[in-house]
Image (cartoon, rainbow over all chains, first blue to last red; front, side, top):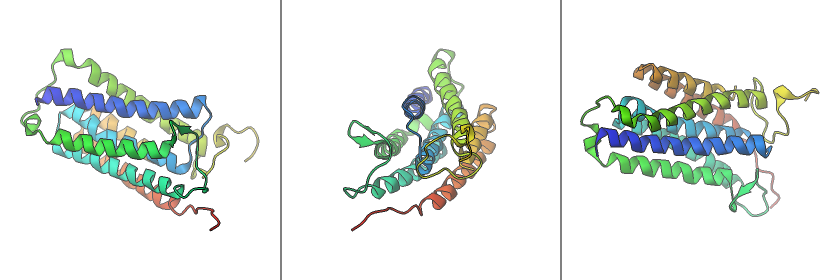
Amino acid sequence: MSADLSRLLNAIGLLAIGTVLALALVDQVWFSDLPCGQCILQRAGFFAAGFGIALNVIFGPKPSHYGIAILGAMAGGAISLHQTLLHIVPGTGSYGNAVFGMHLYTWAFFAFALTIIGCAIMMLDDRQFARSAPMSARLRVLPLSALLLFMALVIANIFSTVALCGAGHCPDNPSDYIMLATSPV
Amino acid sequence: MMSLPFLFFACGLGAAWMQHRGVAMGFWFVGLVAMLVLFRVHVTEVLNIAL
């Protein structure tokens, strides 16, 4: 696999992570499904994992970038697994709306696992690490779009989290945006 | 407080965009540590079940 092809595949991976984060934001804004503290940390986990993939897109593929993505996905996966286990006993309730029969934290765990598997598969081909030449101009549109989406989402999440939680910790079961509340909470 | 990991990751992405790879990786590491520390705070949330 050439470095250019690897960058393209990484851009597709980054776009997939961006889509997951964008859908979470749509769920929050459109369906008023406010994220709990651990849900927000899982979003941060997606950014931690996507960061390594973004580095692959910007600087070219390197094993250290894949390492960053795997470590970020492991951290995020641990958080989503913890939240899944919190609610795994029947009758112990759940958090948020179910999507296709599973809650978002369960889907998040599968997404983190897929990220780790994807990075491991990508690392199997050593030829991508041989050289890191500048990307040819005709291949730049998709990586640039994926990067811009990823950057826009991280900025959107900063504002969203500050609006939801203020300067402190997020409530376990938020009912409103703390910073936007008209009456004292 | 909870927005800190996002802030560090955003700074890291900005540094990467400006071709500062080492700085970007530093911001990523600080963001990951912040995320795990915040998880340590939230992991103690108890499950209210009656067995």
